[in-house]
Image (cartoon, rainbow, N blue to C red):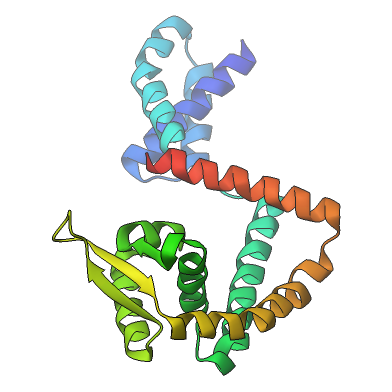
Length: 213
């Protein structure tokens, strides 16, 4: 009985603190003294507390699930390493007047049939938003690396086509880029690390796709 009285006093103190703004510990002490001084009808008290139980259940269901120290360390290390890696790879391409986004676009086009892709498809596989891709393609057109052609079947759609100059640009940049990827990333991973990392990010990619559906 004593444990039940303490439990209900604690719950009531929570409720009254929310409703009144008074400090919970003072309310809890007052309730304990009030309850021990009278005959306690726990069933009646339980019925009175039911709305509060529901309120707390709703709050717990919507409360953020904060990261514990282990989760925070994994997340922060990923964010720091991935940003530094991408910045470094960007810098390593600067001598070729390419960004990582440019390189990815040219790499995808170089593997496509006739080095041609629809802009919408290219945005998806190069992991660039359509608006950003449109901007980059305009810059790359000025550099002479790609050109655009309207789709015959879809007047609003366009093809991105790699030019001979674009092909020369990626052929020249690829050896330096591969060296950067190895020295900055792969050289610190053994075969087991590579396999584990690939499996981890495959799961992450699948989760993101599932959420976005």
